[in-house]
Length: 179
Image (cartoon, rainbow, N blue to C red; front, side):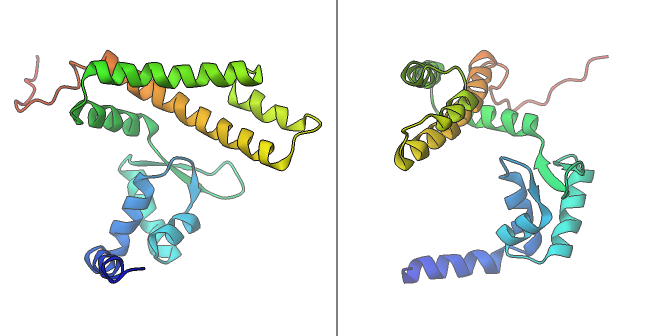
């Protein structure tokens, strides 16, 4: 680690509270996680992390799932998708550029479907049972399945941003209440 990186990390720790770090970690979740996992990511202890997570649940930022062996927390994926669509709209890209990105993602998925003769990431994972696959090919297929799922989520968000391009346009005027 360089001196600049060390100073930057120290500055970050001095300028953020444990609560700030928990909130940042919680907002970046892409799958349900336990309070212990989030506490570890935030570099903070379990009990205060859990209190912050409960406030985030009360505020509608996170959801809590107690159906498994451990309570997990996950973000409101609709809110995340809307925020990501707004970021795409505000990023300076044109609707044509986003349309090209959407076409590229869909083409990549079609290439995997053709290469492996499957229709989904889970069907691709099922091919790991085939005889004769070496460890490198198994790892490659697992990674492709993860990337495939990621692209499916991105396709949904980019498609939404394209469809709702005008709606997502930033405005400086407050919306008028209708009676």
